[in-house]
Length: 446
Image (cartoon, rainbow, N blue to C red; front, top):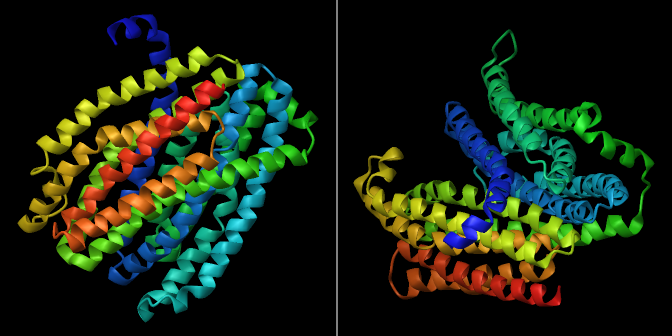
């Protein structure tokens, strides 16, 4: 590895320069989500429960939209690697149209969920605030999908800093908007939970408008602005984005659903298990956001090398990302294992919950390398514009192996709440192995 580092220092630096802005943006989103929950929590239990319920419905739909938009990065990245700049203009235009199309579809799904809220078995007290809050969130879908189109275009040409800066400013707007509209500051009416929705809407509108403004005014986008104006709608490219985006979105939603179902299973055990699980899941994001950032950087570099027809470059960037991931794993494993009895104190003073959360953090530490491997390889496969097989692998790993194993450990073999966490490393191990096979298959085919 030392020899590899010496020969490829530039690749390490390039991967980090692409990944760090993504990591910072994700950290900002996690932080603003935490602040959001704290601010809404001050409104009372009913509003907090209503927001939690509405966000559960909305976030799954939005996560799909985000994953769907990922299709644009490898397609633009390949054209960028080929130096086929005319195609980039066409990909931008058709990517915007494909995202608008998906935005319409997601809004229709959310309207359906809005109508069905009264029939979902929720307490009567949360029905109206849930619907009011969700109605405002629905209006934020279009600006988010527009922002994602520009964001993924920029990542395709190797620019991750622009989106990071916009997202950090949007986080600040979200917090300030929440404060003003929720609590009725500066002469505004007190709007409570609906005010939180308006704060979120303003932040997302800002994200779309800011990227559009920068695209048309920043000199570094001048070439792509001209190419976009000259390009025309292309049905084949439009459908290629849709066909690639749907399984990419499905893959991310399946991962989110699998963890959500584990939380539901934890509720079948007891409240202590639910509390400990929430603590462990919250702490696990410290590792996940780093791996996701490295995965995004890997996707960009792999798509560029694919466009340049450079097989050695693809292998090199995948190894580079793996090495960076292993280096961070040394820290994350030490953090989770060494701090397992201390970190839960940040969330609760209940010693029973703290002990159980500590046991879950042991499993969390064990699965770090497996989680990192599957995320990096997922980024590599995405760089190949490979989506259907990875989505199938994700379904098999999580729904046919991980979740049944978690259920068996907890409810059949008697391991209790921590048994649900045993399924995570098993599913991630299978996923990592199958992604590895797929990666080598694509290399041979390449």
